[in-house]
Length: 460
Image (cartoon, rainbow, N blue to C red; front, side, top):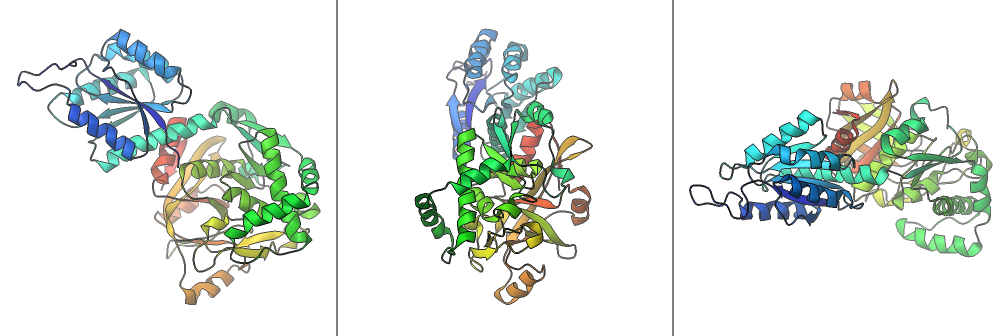
């Protein structure tokens, strides 16, 4: 799980021990300490600015220091008391040009005049159009803390995408119009460079994997599965392809990638199901069919979750029960297997989508809370659709029949109950794929990311 590095800056003119007419210090040290501790407990790494800022000179020195810190993900401005917003706004505007997240946090309480200091700075930022998130709530207010932390995590993700590289093996897969990308738009919006390679280099690399490398990989893969890895050329090609992808990722310094899979590679050498499963299990974001939008969604959820991510078809939607079955074409990280069907091996099984065959992963995903999400485009503009969900396992008595319903029971299944308006979900969904991420916090994190990136979010 990521731990964003965030500057904690207290501001206010009534500082240095100044007391109000009742004899109480304007700035409450106990409130400051409990607020900082709440953020640390929620997973932030705080870089505290020792001086409470009030003057223009103090603000300039403070924000100039943090502007130069490349590893910093954002700042939390904590209202200590009243402040002259004009003393802070210019230096804060200069810092905002980094694109890093800015949170203005106001802890409730009449003593000390914190709300006044918070609102006057919030209003100044709105007047000058400096993006930020204003949060009003105490250190004990879990919703307020979540709003702060989700914005900080989203800022970390935004910063990590900048100057990253998304690699592509091959071209568009199976005619997916809703997965293609405009490289210039991706660079402008995210700072991501899209680099591409033909699958020829991938095939050549796979074929040069040594016997020793293959045996070592089998040893490393085996603990994730409940049965022995099959012997034979089909299994070996699937593992060689996995190793070849990892080698090229390292060689080209790609941060994540998408792959055509079919037609082409799955006909000539091996289906990509198993390689994709293990890459996802390694915590590397990927997608098939050169679906760029799904790939970036996988990247976001992988980096924000402590669990691995599963992408697959919205294979069936039961409006009466709010149930969705997500079934991927044999690709799923084995670490997501539940107790009923632990991870085991199957064949890809569809010759019309890859004559070469190959291993696939068979499992039913474990229970948990999370979200379904996918980035897409409408009329060329990015939008994110997301919904809260619960993953469940059918009963042992129902299991076989439920898996047989789709006609391909050996592909990985996730049984999901969606907590959203199902008719609305069907109307706004933007592809046949959904990306399943474990962790209830992902809902607010993705909303915050879209807020930072100015992406329309349809949060169901």
